[in-house]
Image 1 (cartoon, one colour):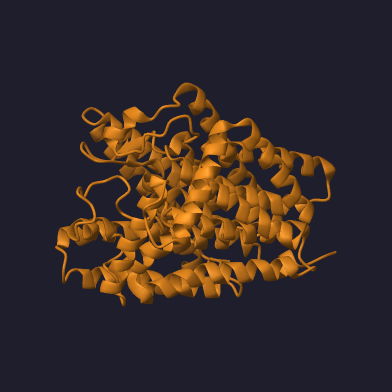
Image 2: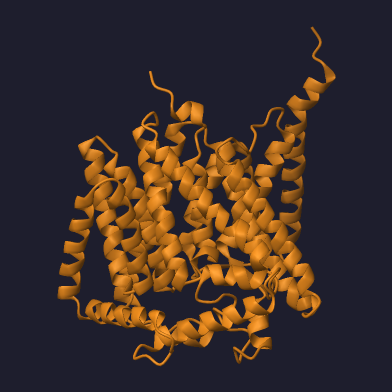
Length: 481
């Protein structure tokens, strides 16, 4: 029997395209090899990741989760004068491979399901509004100034696409376990790198000339920022705590809580007040819903920690001063960090009042702050956001952008609570849902003080973790033999 033409096309077209792409890459590499060896190496790297992801999309997710381990220490030379973070360079390759696979496959699974439709809709609306905010910012900013914000919106979108890639790729609970394992490995790697950094390079004063804060004797790891590291690890600790409390195997439970202890030690050594609050928020929510003993144990261990650490006592004392500063009407407080944070909030709020509907344009805050005289230099390392993610979104995309943005987190919280409350779900899915519930609260609390909801490495983990909450599909996760 002769095969139908369309079946022949579906069977052989992808292979032909693979060979054509392979030939083009090989030819380009041969031409560039003698003059631009770095670009050739990158081309080979990108090509390898592209084909591996086309072959197995889940492998691309695992690669993505390991990319933040390069942190700020490694940048890839895209051109002779431009370098980018490893994750910013490789994530687009993974996305391109995923799109290519969907376009060339005879059958593709939907990227939407009943559990994800609300989050997906809120995300789409937010991206559209953010784009509109950039268009209207052309009325008071130049095209080149707005272009920078546009590129950051593309960056946000590429990380958000990991949500849909994960939804489409994870089909079984074993696959879900594998991704959670890789998330955990990445967090452990970040913590271990931080322990090493504390011994080898405890003083970051030399990096101040490059725009980084001169932290001394604080765990900053490869991200070079104790606040972001502490907030991220608090998110992961919450997830592992939820899973650990629903694990019935003693061996697995011991392993999970050992990892939690390691990550918690790393959080403690960041001496970050925002990280301490995030950690406390995540543990409190999980303890409130599942086990009050966990809260008591955590408080006891923390008290022991601050007893033996003068630096921790100092930071907790400053935290108390910060709370007083946040509750007061004046920035004249003994804690200069709290004063700066309050001033940053007030400046950002004034921008919201000035342009409440669509804001000043996504990620245009650095330029607008300089325009308003809030900052002296437009190129400061942290100038693209205020000391609050939600205020940043309000100032850059207005109320029309703020509503769908916050709805993403509200839908995530309600979805995780519903999955956890459903006793028909497997222990892993219930435990993971409880962990995400605590982790979301941890991130939201952290984002009050740090612009963590828009920090690229945290975005990467956030979107993949959120998709895992709704994967595998409900009918598979709730079935029992």
